[in-house]
Amino acid sequence: MQRNRILVMGQDRDAAYAIRNLFEFERHDIDVSIEFEVVREALVERSYNLLLLDSRVCQDEDFDLVDFQLDRGLQVPLVVIGGENSGLRRSLRSRQGLQVIHVDLDGEQLLE
Image (cartoon, helix red, strand yellow):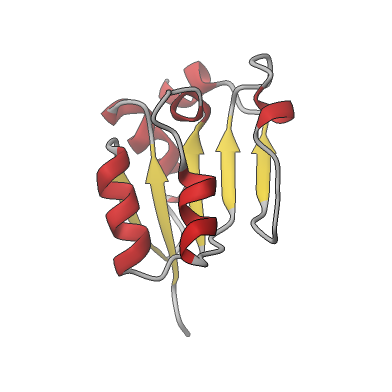
């Protein structure tokens, strides 16, 4: 049985590992990053089944992971965790076959 490959991006190390730890007891290959350039390189070099994002990285002016994927013909679904009160749901949506899913989780509770 093949393991799913998941890429996690958090605004900081604590947030990234808190998201990663949601899958602590499941068998997945999980890579973690806090830098956009590393995530972009990983998406091009490796095949991922899922991209998990801390909602705060989506509000960064350098956030371009939807356009980045579309420009390269990639379609790794994005799951955005948190951000329910930020207006992110209206601005970050699925398009051109690239699925964006929003999950309402309190980031502060995740870190505890």
